[in-house]
Amino acid sequence: MTDRDVLARLDDALEPLLPPGPPPVTDLVVRGRSVRRRRAGVRAGLAAAVAVVAVVVGLSVVGRPGPVVEPPSSSATTDASVPDGWRLVGLDGVMVYLPADWRPRSCGSGTLAYGPVLGTSSGGTGCTDVVLLRPVVFGDMALQTEPLNGLEVVRYDRTCDDTPDAPAALCAPEHRTTIAVPDRGVELVVTASGEAAVDLAERIVATLRPMPEGSTAVPAVPVPGEFARVCKAVFGAGLVLGRAGLDQQVCGAMYVGPPITLVPAPGTVVPNGSVVEVENRIALGGVSVAVPRDWVPEVCAAGQVGFVPSGIDNCESESVELTRATTTPRGTAVERGGFEVIEQDWSCPTNAFCVVSFRTTLTVVDAGVQVVVSVDDRAVIDQIIASLAPIPDGLVAVPPLRARASAAEAEEILAAAGLVGVPERTAATAVTTNPAPGTLVSPGTEIGLVSATG
Amino acid sequence: MDDDYTGFAAARWRPLLRAAIVLGCSPTEAEDLVQTTLLRCYVAWPKVVRAESRDAYAGRVLLNAFRESRRRRWWGERPAADLPEQVLDDDTGRVDDADAARRALAGLTAAQREVVVLRHYVGLSERETADLLGVPRGTVKSRLSTALGRLAGALDETEVDR
View (cartoon, rainbow over the protein chains, first blue to last red):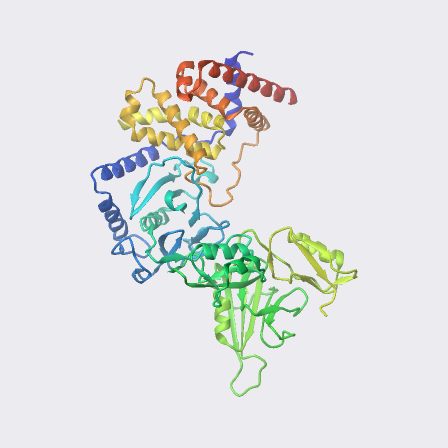
């Protein structure tokens, strides 16, 4: 076989690997013209003016959907200048404006992700049609950058060719813009499908800017959210962990429960040295909520996840219970934390004796889970409702066991959740687990099977 | 200018995709890399036109873009979600071909892949390839020979397996 034959056979073999469809020539020409225009602007020494004009023009076109961002007065804006309907999120020294009603998504360790409310007409799914802010590693080569609101960035646009033959995987989302900021080691990725979403994405991109002096951002939580890693990220961002001001060294070495979420939320732009608290998050069936930090697990009923205030040994008074919903109550579903939720509120009648003052049942319709919160302080219910969110990426929840589950059955239940059951003592049945049901752990974690609660 | 460019881009699209895959890109990465290459060609079109060989110019741009992406470990864009694997036709022969290509390329070093791309897909001469890679002509010859030998062996082996 000659060299030519070898290469011809290689070409034939490569054919099935080539993306189908014609080349996106029209798109390339459009993008090429755009790059040329940008470069011409830079060469004319109008870089700064171009950035400002781009924001003004990009954000003030009449008839475009979504809220309108007025351009901040300077690149070093502050929280006070955030227009109504928008919010700021930041990471590693840069920040960007997003629609205020966009929700966090879980799209990878150390990554801040936000998108429209799931289930709405403008909402995407999962990690498509989102805005991502994440760390990025660059080599030592000199990158060709361009100015953007006081940052030196590398911009990369990818637009799906409007070709009927193109596979869906190549066109979802249709448009992706990446703005890398090499000297900050961070990149902004905006993906969008549909004309309105692409338009909004372009407006979001135009607002990327440096954080003001004296500010930092609550870091994205590493996954898994082990305390030591959370600690390192928080101190690395120039923040203080816990109102008591935990020492960094102590903090990095200690383990307390499943600390997954930070308050204020990751991405929030705050003054340097601000206090950050850690949430105690529990989950069932893909739904998670944050419970007060001093609450502890309790076996309220088989098949349930239960947490009660420390020092209470029953679920009759204050408690949070997560259980599988067997029916869907009547009522209008509202959006909570990216889920469709039906809320039912009850409060103790005046002059009546009740063990608790308030009870709210949240039926998460799309996940088939009920969250029942019984408390004396209505504010606790509001906090728990506000914390409703999908399970963070890379973690699984320890599932509750069935009543009188044999050790073998318990191991099966755990295996189905990607966990390994380990009997803590010889016993015919398992009552609960250690860590407790609802705890968020890494897949493959060994879970103790407890035969009695003592 | 645009008519001239669109003809060029359409003609080079598939050869450059093949070259990108030979260099080690996945199909999705290859598509991004070729788009980047052709975009750079558009922006520098006057230079492309003046070049002795437009195809060779585009090939150099492709190789440079590939090296940049690998050195900075950043693809400019990366899928944000788990995108489904690209669906191939339900055609056993095509799947076998794709598998054969993957196996054959897996046996080549990065340096050998570059030589194959520059000589075969970009159409550079031995001297031009040597100059571009900064190695002696003899090295280009030996790398190409070794690479083709390995490719032939791997493709033959796959043929026997069928």
